[in-house]
Image 1 (cartoon, helix red, strand yellow):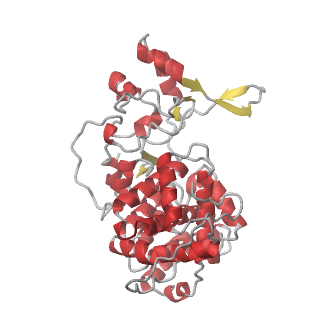
Image 2 (cartoon, helix red, strand yellow; image 1 turned 120 degrees about the vertical axis):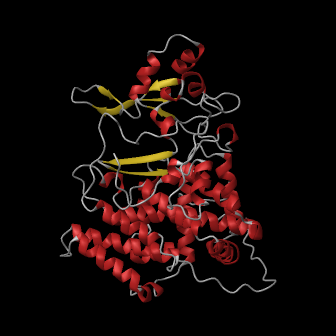
Length: 459
């Protein structure tokens, strides 16, 4: 089979686990799902110390929705059971040098589906497939963010010993259910999205805004409010983007760093109020809050002033020199989230809610960029790609695998009235940086800012 695809996913296929050299193992900080087929393989293992450890550490999941008979049914095939973490919140299958005993003693064929595929995310749609990487893995984050031409074809990667994972990842779907069907117009819409994300003649916030405009028009076509085919719309939209006819209207969109920062704080607060916040993420949040002037007497106004300075003098110069980093973040997120269809929109018979998917994409981007602005302000001239990778990776580990985060983020945007075109512009746009003046003092705003539930202060 040679699946058609508008992108080259060789960057995802090139991933190799670095095992005990990893600075933030994937076997720490969360539960590990075990699919039904793997669970049944474990039950048939002969007696051994490892078999005893597996039996002690794995528990069956239960679907809390009563079946027609009133009994509780088994959980889904892909999350049929889970491995309980130990008292240190580590997978009990890890050896002292942070390698997997199951992989080492039984072979990669005995890994659960989640362990075998992570951090690869493969979507199979009939004869078509796409592959992304979960940026919660430090090595995956480096591979994605730092590649100056992410979608360029890559030379074949020679086989390398992989500490935990097989070289070719199976698809991320339940094999008993079969692959999803390819929705109508999927390929041409995805090609349009990826082409817009990569047009560097537009600043990144404008590319994002264009995606929002695209999503609203596609929703209008689906509702019958625009009497045009998707193919006609795609052609016209490409022409408008190429001509630059939409630029003047975008330049009039509002700038409101105070409202933008308030949303960043609330989104970060959602993650900080979880019970399993890692020290690594807490360090990043500490750098973020320090970089925007956190202290005993801070107000939203004082934090906003410092946030703007961090943007102008630390964040913006760095990303102006390295425009590929956040562009790559968006490309990978588009593939990972199946934007603008979304997982719900990919279900049989579902009608994609593309504007809602754009709001979710904007929430992720707003959080990541906001954290990076603060971290850049904290490190100043020393801000580097290593700080970017750590910030993105630790944040991704806390929200990419949080099953409710994107829905909660979407609800927050609704409550804040940030889900419309004006609100999206406020979240995406920063004022053009002021010309740096030699010796300009760094504004200090000492204080934890809190604007109600979900707001974040220094940990």
